[in-house]
Length: 115
Image (cartoon, rainbow, N blue to C red; front, side, top):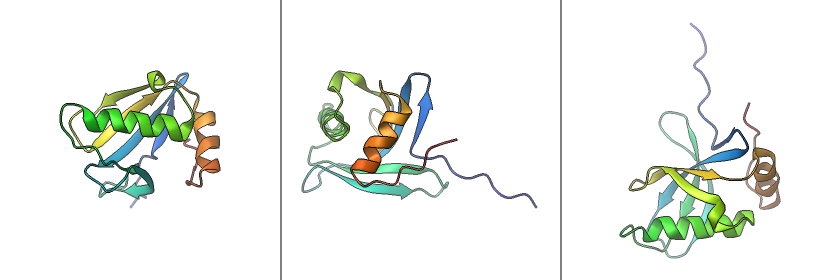
């Protein structure tokens, strides 16, 4: 019986950009990046807690602001590529994957480089 394929890592390269897969918990006590979580399918996601409520795009705006601040990139370089109204989202960051990996290491988040 062959080994099951490994789950998706929480970020990967897409041309000159990077896709970042996140799991958002709204209505938290404060905004924070909580680390990396693995879902039932074995896919990794960056766990993010937001104080904002999930209505009228408030949580998405707060998510973009938090990611921009942590990764030191402009908010305009981040778009929600999938999951606008869901807790599991895909963000498209207009930065190379290598830059994101370096920043993750600086802030102490595991940064296994995707293959």
